[in-house]
Amino acid sequence: MWSLAADSGTLLAARNQMAFTLGVHILLVPFGVVLPLMTLIANRRGLKHGDADALLLARRWSKVMAVLFAVGAVTGTVLSFEMGLLWPGLMGRFGDVFGLPFMVEGIFFFLEAILIAIYVYGWDRLSPRVHFWLGVPLPLVSFGGACSILAANSWMNTPQGFELDRLGNVTNVDVFKALFTPAWWYETLHFVLAALLCAGFVVASVYAVGMLRGRRDRYHRLGFLIPFTIAAIATPVQMLVGDQVMRQVIDDQPVKFAAIELVPETARDVPEVLFGRLEDGEVVGGIEIPGLASFLTGFSTDTEIKGLNIVPAEDRPPATIVHWAFDIMVLAATALMGLVLWFAFVWWRRRDVPRSRWFLRAAAVAGILAMAAMEAGWVTTEVGRQPWVVYNVLRTEDAVTDSEGVWISLTTIVVVYALIAGATVAVLRRMAAKWRASESAEGAGPYSASGPLVLPDATASTGRQP
Image (cartoon, rainbow, N blue to C red):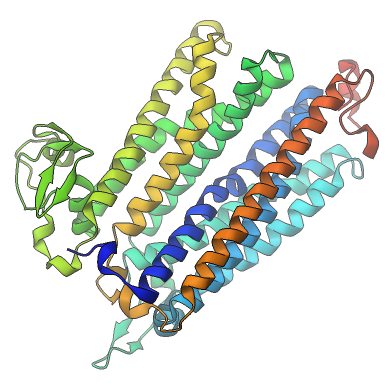
């Protein structure tokens, strides 16, 4: 069976570097996609209802959005270079087929950078309504950029739009067909919902911690409600979409599904195994629920699931890693769904946030669970495709560079990313400390140093200047 232990030299270093940089970047993407939406919701509420707290949230979130976009731009640029430097066999051979999404994503990236700059700079300098409408394209642009990259990844999972001649050269390229592969719609929908879920729970968790520390004013309540509501809406939809995604994977990538369910041999009445591992073709450890995997697959315990044995051992993914990643994703999502149901019940009864400290503790942890689910889902998708970089067409070992020094670049990347992470946390903590200090200063608004925010006449009665 293929395993990391079997790799050596450049291939192992390239895999590790790509996994590390992609694993870091994927945690930033949800904020780039969802923070613009959250910010505009708060901005719109502030303008419509004369809500100074909502406008204050919008202003602060826009600054956080700018910081995280800058960090995401750095990590995303590194990934772009790695595609060509680490995997020349992929880009050199298939660049003409699936290169278009990268160009489109670049256009969206520059548009997003310009729009964020205008939006952040526009506070105090534009009329409130003009400022708001200039920010409206931001969520659409960020969503377009994510869809573009997912088109490239979907092509790697379900490649089409080209032919290969007798020598293996690419011919008859159909760019449009390559752009919209069978996996594109479900990968995109699944990822966008995951981004809404992840960013929503993470931002809400920040305000849940503040509420646990006694800051239960309207500002913190609203700061919790907006992102948590977004996540609460996305979570049950994601559970339904995730089920459909698995049904597509069964058809498109049966070997990946066999690894997800940890099925070594094609069989019926397959148990659902929670964790466990595969050793010498046998499932070891874990908690077995008889017949459940077959039932969930075809609504009958007699449903057949194709096993890893349908392909040679060298064409199988590392099943234990894929299986554990999938289990972590599902269990984290299930726990988050429980939290959403708790919130929905209390809101239905009292139209208020649950006052229990246990709920707030769970909400504070929800951000970590959501990020774990996001990371685990991406591991399932990417590692489950191995040993293919282009599924059933190009092996990863045939795409890797033959240049030396990848271990040096990996070490450098880890050090640089650690410094970037530390700097990012330090900047966000300093911003938060400044905001808390300005709130406690009598008569001073949090942005009074840069000039007051001019509210429409409807907000004049609030008596609070953000």
